Image 1: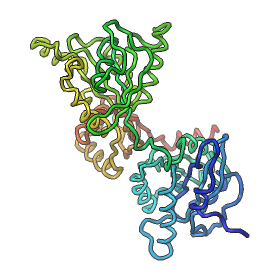
Image 2 (image 1 turned 60 degrees about the horizontal axis):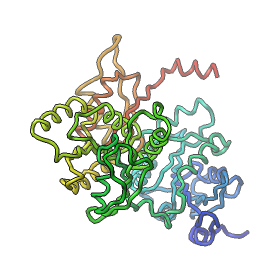
Image 3 (image 1 turned 60 degrees about the vertical axis):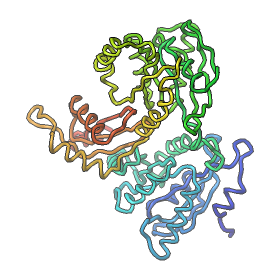
Image 4 (image 1 turned 120 degrees about the vertical axis):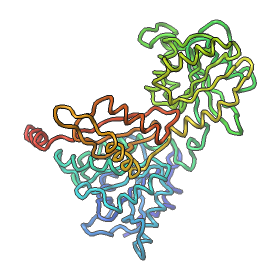
Length: 465
């Protein structure tokens, strides 16, 4: 019986003629959570040795896999215990090497047991991996058992995906999720992680987006004209600022909602929307010489709803006098109250005034967009918050906040687990305090509530099924 190929041999030897080296998916977790069973399910054949005894898999072993025409490598690892000693430490080291060589990490947790101290320790390590992590709640053999999987939100790795590796329940959905997380090329050849940050310049027509891009580039990269609507297609430019390269996109001016636009303007609006969604941070330009308009607010709303980081730049500041400055201050308080968290900078693309200040503001917004609060710290914070300012009593009782977790970043998304629905104003209070205590400058925050169903209702639903 021939030995399974080692990870180094596999990753160097096997390449796909269409996509280059095959991406690597590492399956990790503590002993006896069903990693090898899951590997067999992912590769579509019984190749990994499976036995109901902890520690059967010791080395990292690679297998060919394919799903929906996409080839990738699945690496089975031994039980990973971060504080292991002796032989267990050597097994854990193999798992850590698999993590280091992987493009996507699948962390398997036994949903029937819940998150153990070892699982939580593994989650803390994976938070620092800077790679996509997919949390799998294994051994969920029925709809009723899915309630156990929801408890794994507390690990702070995002949504737990319930499956049964033994019976195949949910495995197809998991493969789709893995494919979505795979890079176009493996990390060794993919420069996107360290590539230029993507910045979209957006605003209503004739606000100075193209002029700003030319000023930043130090040359005429795009056509500038006093006629509104000169830019139709998004224009990409790599620009050196502050010793680093940025990818700026000049977009068409947003005049109307996409549904109300027609002809060229309709397609320009669609392309602008796509450019915003492809960017990491958007600079919304406002004409400082004119009152903040409904169009301006609509552009800001579009950026916020797209979940991008946001910087607001008041352009044409060279045309602003003392009276106008006073009016702008009042307009900011009135019209930009909902985005007070967005950094604001006063610039002039025509004269170059304060254009260099954009770089630190972009960094501030991106840091807020990628900020993560550890689950333990977050729950200590929310417990103190609720104790100091409990939810108002409605109908003789008040819903309890059970715990809170940050599901993801870019933008930061939080899930509040409660015993009942929260009032919208209390949810806004939580968001305001999140910003006051943790920052998140320049980034929208997505806050959602998961209310725990009463046992009677849950049993009734299960009976109907």
